[in-house]
Image (cartoon, rainbow, N blue to C red; front, side, top):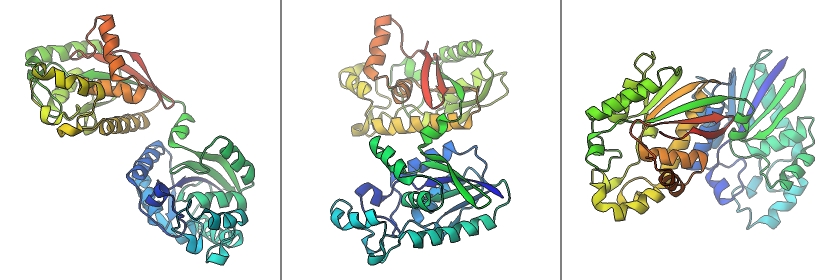
Length: 410
């Protein structure tokens, strides 16, 4: 019998963050850990799994549930998949108790403090894998969500793999042995386990499968607030007659593009623009809150020309938190989340319409391409062009995990 395994370490936890020993004990996923799990879940969405098993520790179970949401499978938790047991050193601060911890690490034996050694781990792991294989048929693909040290010990006990050489390579490159939410792969065939892919981040995993996706980013047509020079973020205003004409021009420019999917901001001005553009394409845009304009807080609806001295620096830093709006980090995070999801959901060669907003476009260029706000506006000024015209169109190409601006907005 042959079974292919994907192995994912859980997301970052509180104890990971503050550097406490964490074996059979548990601590919750941090917000970063949840985001890591969502990232890996998205990267694995097209992989078919016949079964999903996870450690009984909540940090692994929570990670597994996030991944399993794409596959309609309820994860089965198993105590045999829990982390290596470090006994009563579990929970200790790693740096503070280094001298107590290190001898046990070097010997890989924690039995004198109530934990495991390699032989005990091997027996426990073998019992777990025997249970898993009993549920499988030849050719099945299995996801396991477990722990970092657990995988390192599998390298030693189950895989025909030089664990020490691997450790030396990772240390030389200053890389963690098993990053949180990394993906590894191994195969079982007729009693033999073989590691086929070393731990890789979600980004590294994506780069293994060549894919090109073209995003057509369109700003909505002119609105009443645009015409009256008012700040317009999460607040909304209808398209003017000119704005409708703007959208019609964008429709004509994009008439020959075969859109596989379309997304738009939840603001009505963007939804209406997308509806006009997509006439004749046979698809509708899916509204996504991640594509809303930046929230300007107390400045929403204000005449921006009357406050330009105060607003200029805010536009350059893109941080409106002190005004009751969004922080720079909030905006960057939602941009990354949307484009990651859209790229992962797409097939190779897909062309996708994204109808959104002007200030968010500048934030997109920073998030995906590293183009600063200042550089963005100064470049447009040098070239004598409007950097974000209503119904302007930009092309952003995703290829194997990276983005390129292939056509600036015009």
